[in-house]
Length: 115
Image (cartoon, rainbow, N blue to C red; front, side, top):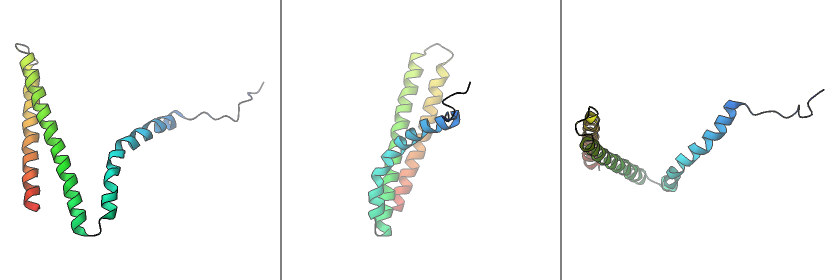
């Protein structure tokens, strides 16, 4: 007795994983597409540099916002876990937030000196 669907090939598990990941990667890269027209239209080096500086300023602003949110989260964790042994985690969050904020400030100064 032969199987009538012998010509039907099952997609391997690894290939199924690729089919799941590809749409996620495309969705993650979609916000970057809004910068493509500016980069392709840029005729001179100065216009391309200004677009690059704009993107860098946006990334630095995002990192600054993340560091402030991280500091606030560390402060909340520190306040909520009063008297427990896990209170140290809040301090670690606040320390890393301050480090990130200092790096962001240094990058802002460097960008201002370059432009």
